[in-house]
Image (tube, rainbow, N blue to C red):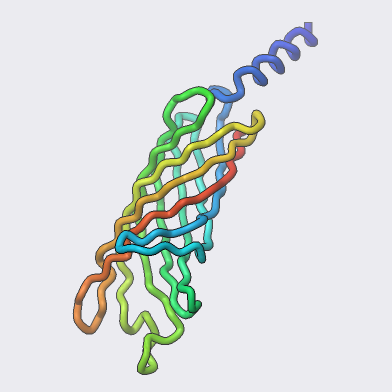
Length: 179
């Protein structure tokens, strides 16, 4: 009897592994590939991470932290976000829709005249909408790609109060582990 139960369980888990009914908990980690600015131009000199934890009822929490460096390597745009997401109940693929809020900060070694970027620029708030498309590669792992649209139009120049638009989009890739 034990062999029959184990065989049925093993066969059903292999045949039905793409449904999230068996996943009680999921942890995902990813990395950004490129940042495209809304005002034009893109930068592949992007590094950081995306973390996500999905709960049994398809809701999840996440955190993003990444920076975009300039070609000269003297300036960086740092982004930190906290996310809430929902996995749509679609078999075979894992489609996630999410939103987040956080901040962006412009950092550099020297902004000219001996001032650092924190002396010239204020930290600004940012929001994002994102989607992730996951493909199960084996029953416990999921390879996913993501696309994030970031809105950040209020990083101020302290001297003039003028606001700068650092909005853009981030493409990323990651791996999820389902338990």
